[in-house]
Image (tube, rainbow, N blue to C red):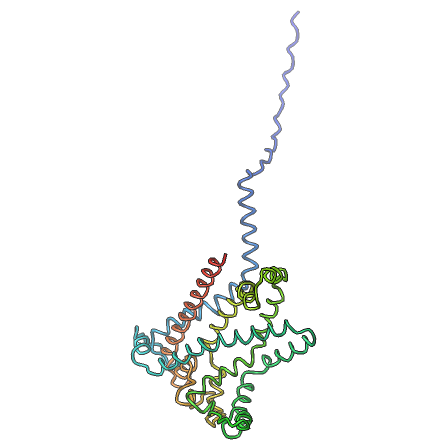
Length: 337
């Protein structure tokens, strides 16, 4: 007897989902790094847009217009290097303005730093009334530059000012101050050293941060007051001194308001008319600074191409001086270590 044939059962294979494979660790690290970069860029985007719109674009536009003849009314006309040739070879007022500005950089910046440092050191040595005197020395920095300059011109008026009146009590013949070509720039320096409260506060904070054990160790080694200042205070203040020097040079290269107001008031024409005085540089161009000359060329004579050439040169000079100061500071710091 033949056994019945077994029924053949057919089974249908059920498809299985492929197992998820994790990316390799290197790819995960790259993905995490890119997410981190995108996050950082998203936070930096507002500042980046501001730099492009308010710094990079105006800078490139100024460079372009400096090679053109442009008066704000007609289409700019390309003239090549003619504006720069006129600036360096043919414009006598540009040399006078550059010399006056460099004089302020060499004299006003160190004078402000020395005055602020001495004032801060005086305040740190006070045992009583420190808060009161800090307020008193800081208040001049809050005075508006225009109002402070007008007040100084009247105080130093050679005929009716109280300064010359007080000097006459001691038998001293006061100078003409803002009306003298020899004394106009020193008078502006006096104005600048009077309002050093902002810089004084920075130096005061730095002096209070100098470790006291350094002074005690120097005293035990027999160092006198000058040696403690030379070998303890100054090295500790070197970053703050660099900051004050760099910002002071940049601000003085843009010295405008005080020189313009002093010249206008001292000459008797405080009302400038349309914002452009006819007496900038009074007396005898002694207070004509580089930004003042730039302003006159651009907004009195509407020579915007030449004014942009002046602005580009000013930017290059400020950038170069800043690099020199930073390099000198690194050399000084490296030598000190």
